[in-house]
Each structure stands twice: as C-alpha cells, then as structure tokens.
Amino acid sequence: MAERTTTRRETREQRAEMMRHNDFNAAVRAHIRERDGERCVLCGKPGREVHHILPRAKGGLGTADNGICLDNTCHHQAHRQLNVEKQLLRYRERHLLTYYGLTHPAQHVPIERIENLRALQEAGCVSLLPLRRTR
Image (cartoon, rainbow, N blue to C red; front, side):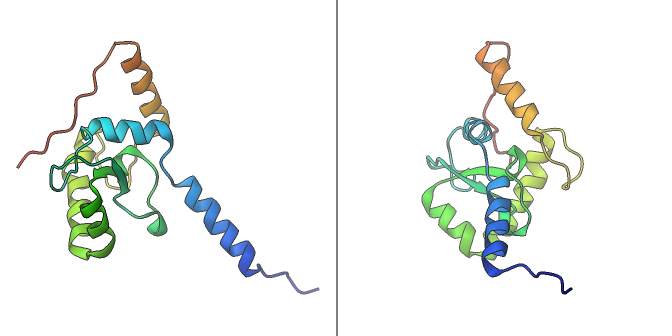
C-alpha cells in the first residue's frame, strides 16, 4: 500500500498553525510596548506596531526578545529592506539579549517569565522601565 502524501491544503493548514504558534500573545505584546515605551526603536517616533525581528517564516518565535515596537514607516521598511533587517538583528544581539540576561542568540525569554513580570508589576512589586537605547 502506498503512503499517503499531504495535500496542498493540509500543508497550508500546517503552516498556518505554525504561524499562529509563533505569534505574540497579548501579554508579550503589551510587555514589548511597555518595554520600548511605545516608541519606534529605529527612529524614536511613537509606534505601537510590534514586529518580529527574526520573521516567523524563518522560525522566529513570539517571544519578548524577538519583538520590538516600530512606527508604520519603519515597519514597512523592515519588511522590504535587507539592511534594516540586519540592523534589527544587531539591535536584538546588543540590547535585548543583555536586557533579558540571555547569553546566546538561540536563547529566548519564556512566556512564563513575562507573565510573572506582568503579575508583579500589577501588584506594585516591580516597575518595568522602558529600554533606553545607548549609542
């Protein structure tokens, strides 16, 4: 008996499920906006769009260390210009990994850690200060 191959529809559904799995949940999205002060990390203008530094299509996860706030213009550029994508990867390595105490680019902040931070903040035990860019 021949083995059954996956249909295009099944492949598309599997890909869609993987994409949903790698999206930011509400707690992580709120944390990223607060961490970045709802400002674009590239130009400093007000920006609430949360962007995956490493795209989901390339295996990027929906974790806080892989997300940044961008304004509409910079978000558009991030998806279309390779030099902006490289700049964002450097930003992750230089700023976000140290902010979260990660030592290797393959490490990620677990969602439980973000949810715990949110709970502590709501209880008034900790204040999450926005990440400030250093030049």
